[in-house]
Image 1 (tube, rainbow, N blue to C red):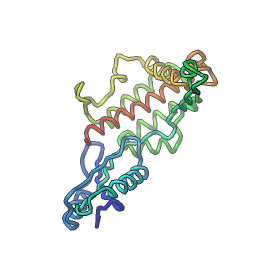
Image 2: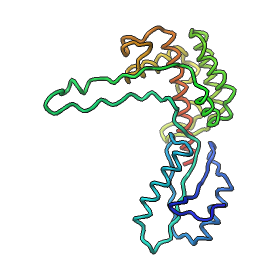
Image 3: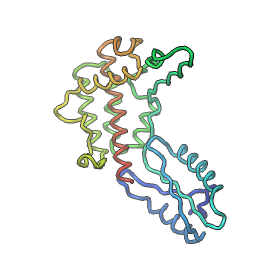
Image 4: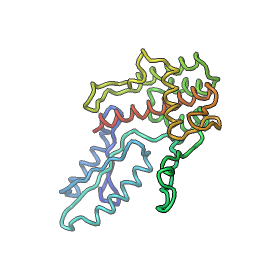
Length: 254
């Protein structure tokens, strides 16, 4: 049971993917608020790309800074929200180009594109375990997708990957909306009228435009063979699918 909810020992409020609260944490917080005579409660939520350790560190540091500014006459409690969302371990984010010097470089420097290697299209065991923890209802589909990403690419593999992603989305999805569209459990990229190869190629093209190289190629002009392009695009499609589902969770929890 939470005995106090100070900045040094903030309370936790845990939600699941459906926005349901963990009753034990709620009971603990309610008891602590009453016991400590809390008059003001600060509730802070992490973003979608934080695991438990990162969220805990964020809360402790931020609450510590805030507590130093609070009027000593107020009895303030601090609570950190925890909900299931996490960044992929191998998110391919290119480095930013340093700003050009004032006396040389100029506009040409601003147009330079940083480059990183695409890496393997397979999902390593640690990342696969993360995804299963995040989406337990999609464990079967995740195993299928991981197996297919390790196989030689081709039209049949792409079609099977696309089907497995649709099954995964159906198994783990929660309906939410950004206010501009009807609530949905599935992103538009998985529409039945779309072709797997077209979707995966579009994602790999997007990676190339962001500076990701495939098989040592030079950006969009040197993407390497179609197999590498399809598989890396499929992996990126899965990454964005999981992020889309986490975004939906954020809406439900919020």
